[in-house]
Length: 270
Image 1: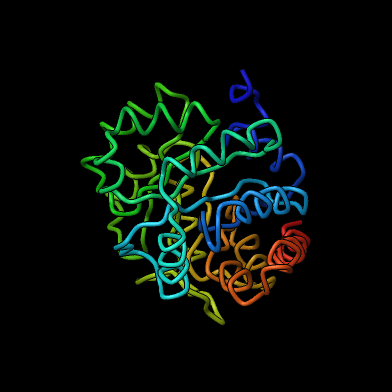
Image 2: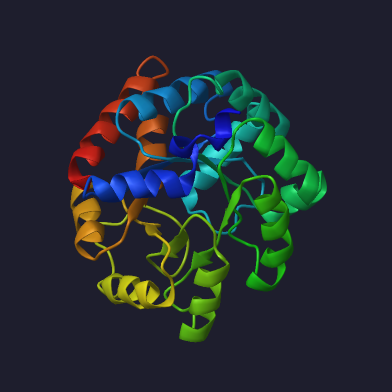
């Protein structure tokens, strides 16, 4: 079976990256923006240019945690007819070529509409390694976590700067694969600087959990990757900045633009 290979699991990837004395580069991409054919090419281009894992968004009409750049990407993807089933079909077609973990980013509603069990079965069948559901509260995560785990999928939970310490500990203990540390209060989006308290949050989380910590929301340039690395995190998630580059490029250059940006960011992970 392809997906039980150690290199394709999230924990296996983090172990390998740790030995290389660097942090993981984890780009976020909206599936279907501008179309799924282009998304498939970008996934392979990101892999070829040093992405360690890729977070792949399933477009949703009411993306509460997303800023304007990713909201617009979701709208374009939905207008192009992108659905969860079509995303699964695309991943199935790419299965033999994708050698890095793919983490699906989706909201609770599409997940519940499809059925938790059914969604996880479909995701597992196409080699998905992880799942992020930003609007899923901790109390409801345990049921989904059990289902996902039975299908060899990590359910990754989010911690915010406002999360109380005792709750942060519970989230870190429940999260599988890694804990997703949101670097800002509010929605996703490019920012020129990162909040200084992120470093202390990373240290706090390290005391609560032995698992890897990846920082996301607002990471948009090389200096941010270096900052996250210096703070002791294990991975950096880059979303809006990449989505914006893809959106602003011509259809002919979107794939190349995504690859060159990924290569630039990867150089900063060492």
